[in-house]
Image (cartoon, rainbow, N blue to C red; front, side, top):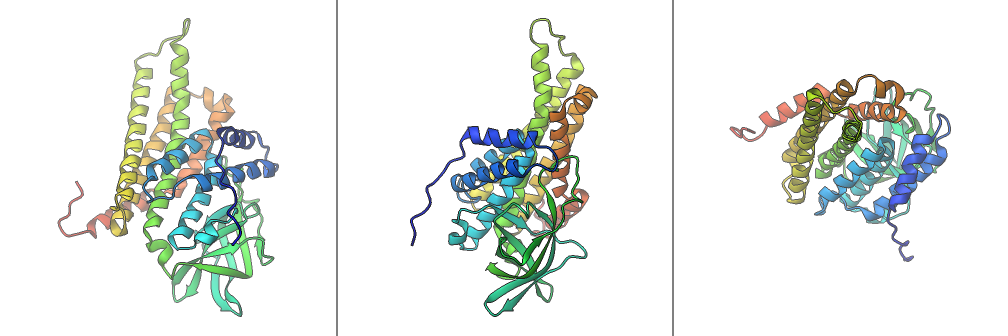
Length: 357
């Protein structure tokens, strides 16, 4: 067995440099910035704990810090960490330990079907997959595919295989997160390593935990948006500044309350995950509830900061515009009223008489 590669830590300077490179990259010229971001992702994959391993709060805090710095950087790092956690939960430590940049492609879309079949040398994937972020930049991915009869399974694939052909990302033109190119991928008899059995990907406790990790990124993005409000208030307290009026103080109070609520929900969720109380139906309810709290708080922070600061930052502060736009796109990973309905159903399907409040 070859010796393990040296353990690296994500030096704060490299994290800052990667975030700055993404912010400075011009449309159509993000390759170098993405390479730096993926290097940070690899380093953090060696440094940060997996969810459920006793330090979940530390993991989610680091994700929120990355998102507060730059949401595009968080959007590169979070799925890499999620993929490593999935592989370890499936007992595939050897795959997780390889120095590769990973993604997770699990979205389903009409008109796209990826099918897994047994070939001469094992499982193979053929078909197309939608919403594949960074397909031309990653080394490997955890991908969900149909195994027939309505069943689905996760597989690990090497994206260097010639049967993997990333499609055009021209249709990916959001105002935010445009520097995390996303598009379709076509596979033709691509060798694949099963990651769990049929249905395992969605049924494992880590599915809920990964969803809360995304919410930690939303919280960090919201805190980054709120920083503008705080910095404006701090400037006004300096000699010669125009002091905040009652409405300005009220905006600070509202934003603080919103962020505190989201932060408290994430901290409580981390404690429950590490205590072993977030598996099965409980984990699903916890994830839906926590994501709902954080998403609503983030949306309210955007609205409150916008109302308090007026049109100036949205018309003359490009970095703030980038933050707001990226956060609005990222938040759409939460399915709004559909997730609220899913939470309501999950609560009613719990133990009879087990009222949640």
